[in-house]
Image 1 (cartoon, chains in turn yellow, orange):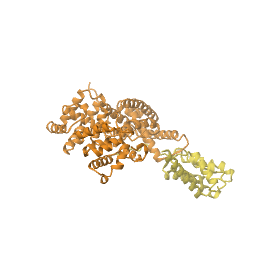
Image 2 (cartoon, one colour):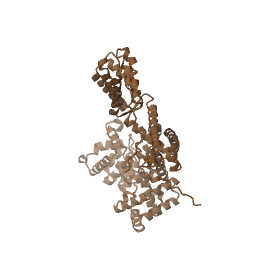
Image 3 (cartoon, chains in turn green, yellow):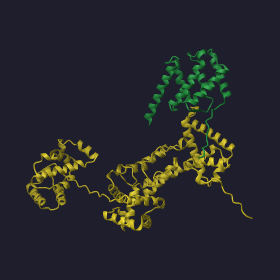
Image 4 (cartoon, helix red, strand yellow):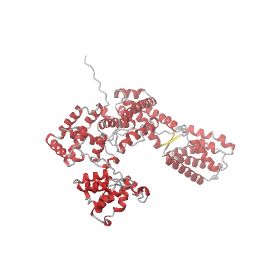
Length: 149
Length: 447
């Protein structure tokens, strides 16, 4: 039997140079707090974002959420230069996981704001606690969805 | 000069109705009617449309989409485009449109067609509701009334054209149409209208009695009503009787059996359908429907002949006895003279049915009844006719006192006890619930 044609191909949204420059433009924000990202780190962040999107089985239509996460989290007292890249990678990964776990019921900006509040507040910059808070959020969204059904 | 005949290289039978756009596109690319470049443009436009649709659904709040949702949305988009292409006068035109129109335009056109279909569907639904068969079958009413209303309320072709939100539980004679989205509902409702317009030609009470002949549980069973009504009508015309009566008898089944064996089922069904049509019993839609599924009708009859289950297809209706309820007054009963005359009449009656009816119509108070049980020797058959007429509170009161046969003192009381027991066992769940609620010591029910 003839193989079916792939009618739509998941594309990766904006191309890599565009994404890298978008991340590097975040240095304007980061510099205010004594932080910065190198070109190599920006590349790693772009690749990490793509990996997170693939792992969470999502399609990104725009440049990816990393730049927006950096902009919002740049004033966090819990960010340090030495762990900056790893923290952003973890935040990106958590973001896409939570998008799935909350069944797309929460918009990007709202979710980032939630993560930022929890990270700076109750979690005191501890990623494991932020993951825990994310799970609680997902549960409450599921409960609300069940009630609606 | 000889004309050059051009043969279009794509054939309708190679197109999958449920994947119309995709399969037509595949065939068109294979036949080189659509170039690979054009195919890639279509892919890109589809991606852009997916992006647009997701932005509309998420109100621009989400820059990414889960693969699962993307597949669902794409399925909906290609379905809508398929609707546009199906509306084309020929496959040739459809391919030309795919070559010259953007995916977005084809989608928007499809949404407009669906909106028109929705309007036509609403008109059809209103027509059905105006003459909806009165039946206790919950699936019939819940699907054709409430289910369809829910469909009109919830169906959103621009978000998910495949999700009709309802289950269409009532089974049609034709079975569930093998379609999706609005086309499924369109086909379902057209068939339902054909069935409903035929069934409404008959007295709904007769249809009820007919189906009770199958099982009283038909009310809560997802079974097709049209099948039994059509079969009964076919059976009756073949027996030379009035199809509107819906009342085949045991002897008719023998006649039918012989006719099917002698003339062949196919011939008999064709003949019956012709006769029913001659009596003006089919609307245009119903006629088409009956003709389309004539082979199924033949098959069902042949199968029942082989399995000796003709009686499960051609039903013998279960007539409902009119319920006569005894009227008991809570004051005094008859005076001595009246009672003696009443007793003498009861004793002199021969038929148990008449005896019971006479008692039901003449007894005034509970004391009359108790005296009668002592003075007249009423056999079990009289009791079997009498006890069903007791209003539920009286029945509960009697059951409390005479329900236990071992405690009865004489033959009449034992006969009464058995009749009470029989009625108790035959009670429906609703009656039982009501029965349980009756406090037999309640002054209201103290006779």
